[in-house]
Image (cartoon, rainbow, N blue to C red; front, side, top):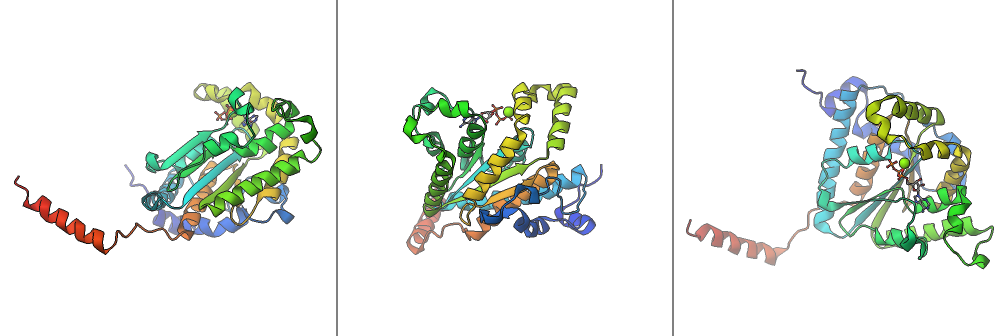
Length: 312
Ligand code: ATP
Ligand code: MG
């Protein structure tokens, strides 16, 4: 069997490496919504690179290795925390991205929450209630598979969801979406000030690629289970969703809570961008394993002598 290529060998051969992807992040990161337009972002972008599956796997493994190390330090320090929100149209690859990027990361340091349509208990509360309950602890990486953003996306596209929320009538005005976006921005500002690094990923799939993936789910018996008639219905609201996404991203992009508009027509590229965005943000924290201090080190020496002196 052929030896798999190392990330360095692929970098030499294909000109793409985690480092190169890191440099590309500026293209996808939005920290100021003033000029944000979704149409300026190409879902099929791979910065000109074309690689095969084995190469993609090896490159991703390099990125994941680094993420594993950062996560160990984050956990050991237990001071900073991280929250990654994943939003996308159906079949954009949220689940696969989460699975591949987080593979190998210590499960004890990761908390994944999938947000579905709210249940009766959720609907008895304010819209951020269930989000707050799912927030990661310090030292952990929280992954939101869908998130509080659904409240300005699906709920905006389908007003019947808003009706179910039983808000006092006086409060449901034309301003409701701007108000909700402002609440989300304020909430994220608060979290950032509490030491939580927030990254928001919009997996940007094209309508044509979504069609291709839906057809694959219909044609391939092993993928049949993934097909959901509801997804096709939501596809019918594509333009409404794009408009809602554009406004949500523009209103909530900030240096402390950036959005990444991740090209999602090529899965291998999506995953690399996500893992490097996480690595970059964690590296910025300059995490180190905690130094236990002089006294504790002396106590460790005492413990060592005690163990060594034990009768076998
Ligand atoms: P997958 O299909 O890969 O399992 P998914 O995230 O699409 O993942 P589903 O169970 O298919 O999961 O869909 C969840 C649904 O719940 C989505 O249609 C989403 O828009 C909806 N949802 C999530 N949050 C809310 C919310 N706050 N209000 C109303 N609907 C919501
Ligand atoms: Mg679904």
